[in-house]
Length: 356
Image (tube, rainbow, N blue to C red; front, side, top):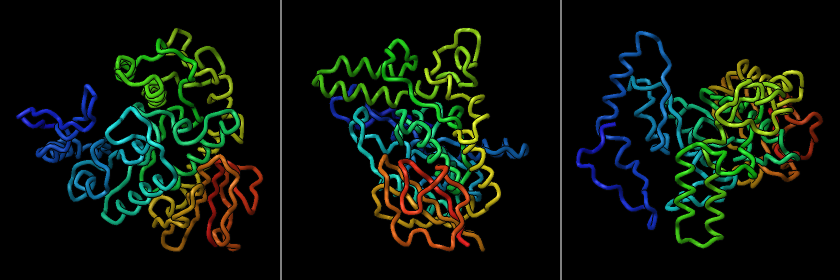
């Protein structure tokens, strides 16, 4: 909004690239808040909830002018700090190797910062412009196919803010298979990126790395047909859809998972129910319990007289639970494994304990 009328070029942040990031020229303009405030006044009589998307903001204090109630602009906004952890600064087409310390830093910053500053978080892991969270944050291979999405569901439903669940996320849909060809991709941004990489003078090895990264991040990953049942096209339509369904739709579908009490969908249902019954998971303080652990993200949520401990294994390793993390005076109220071990966590296992 309100682009600089000088229309100056964006700074060179990625030498050698044909195009450059332009957010500094098109976002957070000097009149953006005036405009959003005016829009809010139009919507106010309808008691509408307003949600923004702010890709140029990475810190809670910079988000606050948009979402603080006193500003009367929007109720909440999607931040980009978490979903850009795998981006390499100055080389957007090369994947950055993130680790759990990055996730811990971003999540802790927003959970604490927005609460302390009086704002409100919009919690999401997927949308129409992002790849599937199972493929991005965990491992979508057959061995861990339904472990990762349950752990991520527990993660999302135990954070402060309003949670957003994108279609297909509730059954653990995955990215487009790697054996699909470029003819299967429709998003022009991905197609243009691939063509640019192929026409560049980079080494074949680097080109391959960049292509793999571009396709892993492609927006088409989250735009395949919703998988309702095991029928043709995942039951989405009897006609030919814009894209073909992911091949695992005979099992990864709503109908199948509704009948399976151990499914991802059943876990989401249970996790949301637990969240709705416990204000600490929505409004509680956030305290990191294992700030240096390479595999386990553990945090405490406390509100008034209630408190919970969330324990999440973000790795493919069987991990020993540190001594003292789980006290004897706790009650296990939600788990991703049928028979959890008292001393260790299975790959991508998650647990929710109530302190008693």
